[in-house]
Structure formats: structure tokens, C-alpha cells
Image (cartoon, rainbow, N blue to C red):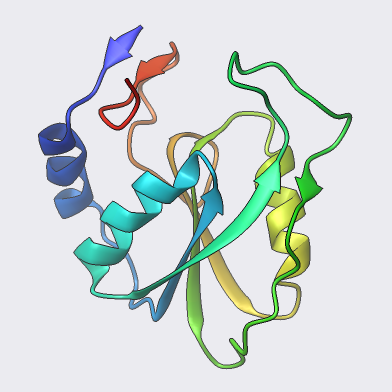
Length: 132
């Protein structure tokens, strides 16, 4: 397991060339701490979209991620960054993107696959600083 600190994540945020972003949407629950850091770094509004796919041991609970709360925000014309902690299969990110169809959305993950990935070199499990 690879331990990451808040300092390491903050340092990596500083070197990524993000475009101008108006709204950061964190995929709850795992992506919320990461999205909070990204939103603060980008001085952007933070929203949370709650989806559920994996349990506490990281095993899939369902065949597909379930959207627990439909997005009802007015985001027309906004530049959006959708953030999750990890995006390996891309299923959760894709389910969230379906809720934002027709909007200008880029994706970000701490590790895995996205438009912006903070730690593409990490393939192992991560010990996040916000998890006990």
C-alpha cells in the first residue's frame, strides 16, 4: 500500500495545468475529500454527487454504480471538473458523467484513468490521508 500525505497531494495539484474551472463535483463518498482539495486549489465551487458502487473493502456492491441522488443543479455554461479518488474501471465516473450529459465536463482522479490524473505512476492501493 502506498501512503500519500496531504502535502504530497497538494504539491502534485500545483504542477498540473488545469484549465479554468467554475465548479468541481466530487463523487461521493470516496471522491469528496479529493474534490475538496481540488476545489480549494482551483478556487472553484464544490458540489457533491452521491453514487455507490463499492463497499468498505472495495468490493463491488452492485453490477453497476448506483446514483443515489440525481443531479439537479443549473450548470449550463459552467466549466466542470468531476473528481473521484480512484478511477480504475471507469464505471463510477461514467455513471456520474451520464448525469451531466450535454455539459462541459472534464474528469480528474487521484489515480487511475481520467482527463487529469494526479498520480498516474501509482498502480498499487493507496493509503489516503483522510482515511483512518
